[in-house]
Length: 126
Image 1: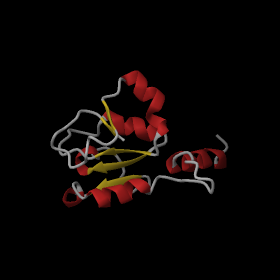
Image 2: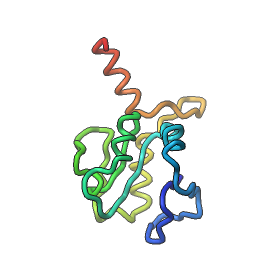
Image 3: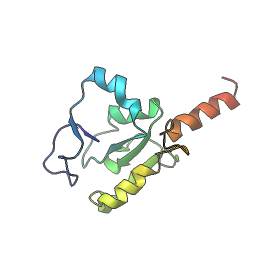
Image 4: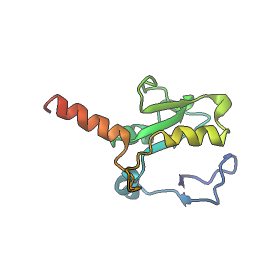
């Protein structure tokens, strides 16, 4: 799904699954319906709030360097897309699918990051 401003400069086909801009309330209710957040920005000053919101909610993030100023890109649930791959849709799709986890019956499981975080909490008796 594509959420946000309908930018004419995106290499992605916005006629497929374009959901428009979400209100803050809708975002709060539906962000965790997804396994990750993708933000392929070509110019940001600092890490956008939506990236931090995604991480706090247990989603992985697939981001460009322009959206990664304040995040540890060495973490396994943060995928950095290099400038030369920003418009390579197959490459980006492959990176996105790293976070989709499906059980034997085809049901999407909670995001990988959420499960790792939950296990970390359990193992430390929090």
